[in-house]
Structures are given as structure tokens and as C-alpha cells.
Length: 275
Image (cartoon, rainbow, N blue to C red; front, side, top):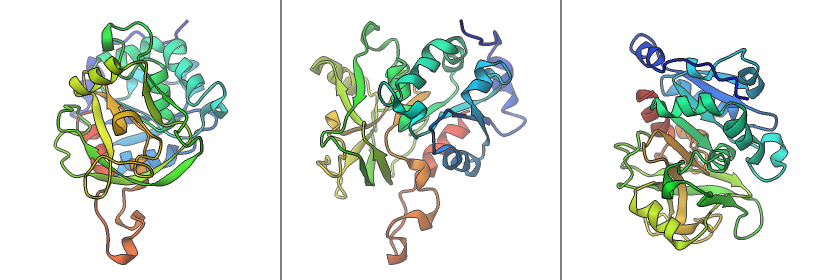
């Protein structure tokens, strides 16, 4: 049974006008990008707080007291039963009422890498209303090369995607990936066609010249080069790359040669501004 507190989303939304948005960075055993995500949210103007999932489950803290939720990267619960699978059970079963209310209130939810895997496997992406619900239409599975991939990649925002995260984001993002199970796969071509037709693809892997990326630019063989998805409402987003790892100019791998730009910070700024 969920321990979600039955609360109206309105007080939390009104509070935003008086103080910076409170951002919950959810931690579970095995996550390892909590602090990077928290720093990105802080630089973007939010007030982040890292909480263990058990603090929510016990009722010590309440999800609905926050304006934004970030589910960071890592290897939650050791990725037993698959990457993000057990964390997805937390979201779907153990505090599903609070998560549902949070999403329905329009507050931003961002899943990065392992967090993206959890959102997809919990049915929050592309969402329960995608293809009229039913069985899960998409998943994130083992990389095409069957090995862990770690490198910097270019991400191109999809102009057809109207989510709050990439609204007005006409510049690419350059940031690293680090995963073994990041390949977007669908149960059939109809599901891929629907993702594209409905504008749910938020970010795609591209080459430096803007053309669709092949390996290694598309590090996992993801269908349609998908790097990130959103729900129909545009307030839930997941992506496999790590924008929180490029929020300062000196983090660019060729900064010492004069290269720079394409920071991932703008994505967090958009989310905070809409929290």
C-alpha cells in the first residue's frame, strides 16, 4: 500500500512565487550521480535536497512538498533484475499515489540514465496514455555492442517536442554517456512511429555536423537515435546521457584547446523556471 499523503498540489505550486523551487533528488542504494544533479539544480536556481527513497516510504518526508523531482544516474539496487527495474517498482508500487499526483499536477520530473530506465520501466515514460496504455510499448535494453559505453556525445533537441525541458533550446547539448543498457527499443514499428508522430522524442544523438549519428556517436544503437523522451504533457523527461556532467565551461573535454559551449545547464534552468 502506498504511503502517499493525500494533499492538494496547489499549495506547493503557489509557494514557488515566494521562494526558489524545492527539488527532490531521489537516492537509492547504488545511485552515484546525486551530488552532480543537485549542483546542476542549484546553479539553475533551485534548492535541491538529496533524500533516500526510504525517507519517502517511511513518511518522514513527502514527495508532494517539493516542486521538482530528479531521479539521478547510477546503479540503483545493483541493477538486479535489470537496469532501473527495482527502482521502477518503488515508483510504480510503493509510492505510486504520490508520484501520480506529482505528475498530474504538472511538476517537472527528470530521470537521468538509471533514472530514465526507472521511469520507462515504471510506465511513466512515454506515459500510461501512450498507445492507449496496455503492455509497455518501449524499453531501454542492452547496448547494441553488448558492452559498457562511456564517451561524449552530441544531443540535438527535437523542435517538434513541446516539453518544458527543451522549450526554446535551439542549441545542442554536448555531454557524456556512461551506461550498459541504454538502447531504446520498441515492441513494434507502430510504437516508434507514434513516438515520432506525437513529438515525444526530446533529444536525439547526432554527429558533429548534425547528421543522424551512427556508432559511436549513437553509443547504444538506440532506435531512431533516441537519447531522451518526454510524456505527452511535457513535464516528465528521461534521457540516457548526463547533462549534469557539463555545467561548467572547464568540464568540456577540449576546453584547454579553446573549445566550449553546448552546456547541459540550460535543460535544468528550463525545468527550474517551470517548477
